[in-house]
Length: 350
Image (cartoon, rainbow, N blue to C red; front, side, top):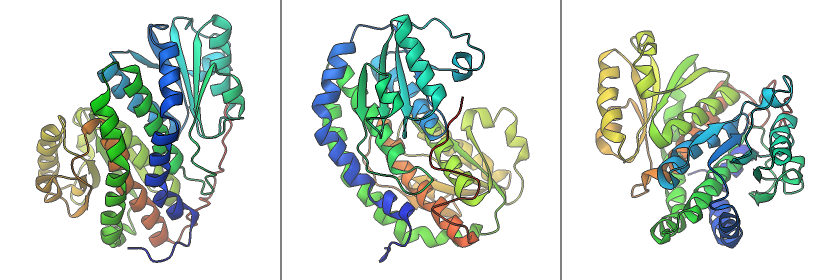
């Protein structure tokens, strides 16, 4: 266990259980009211996002698709800004996800949607941002200022916001509300377990490339962990679905090739477990994130996560070892953990 926190990134990772607990307690009625207002008012959902928030949108594709039977489309912001040829999205609920709420292209998608007559929703950590001012409805994350450049607590809070939104959009949601309320304690448990084993990371001090694999709900987790590793360590890190990886990229695997495998309990576990054994036969070195012993036993490096977290919420739980791994690897490589070279906290794209 870490006795002393010397960087903002670790502090913000450790804050996540409290932030998510507070979010569920304080935003429950707001999100319920928003869902009551928009339910039945749209045919599908369009989500506009960039970077980390785009990974939250990938989570929403599985979440809203499976529990709410809603087709999710990811917006193409440059059609709204540079090409000025926006598609017709009047029948959609248009959701903008952005920690800062500042990026002009994401704001433009919501502004155009409103002009077309669509309902719009902003999920952001800044309730006074341009994105918030462009939306009919706003879900403020209230995660506090995020001082480290790499987003951690605002990403997990975005997933929590989407999970609560999906739950209230569904009519019979009592069981899912109970699962949400149990999540923060599970996150604290995963943080404690991971911190006790994080020194395993020093094995990868000279790593120059790796792959991160997930599938289903944790397809988004693969992309987010890969992004954190790239941002913090300069390691070329490629995220992929385990299904897509078998359609060609698997040819890159050779002896000692490092692959992060995300495989919590759930309907995808058996597939990823079987695929992981195939990767080992090709010489891969697995870094495993799971609550299942049989998968962890395949890994040279293993990060156990708390058990009894339902699959639909597992991306918030399985994310934590990836965040801590990326931070520790940056530390091992001697990089500035809070201010990676070449990055800024707010990135504006057009």
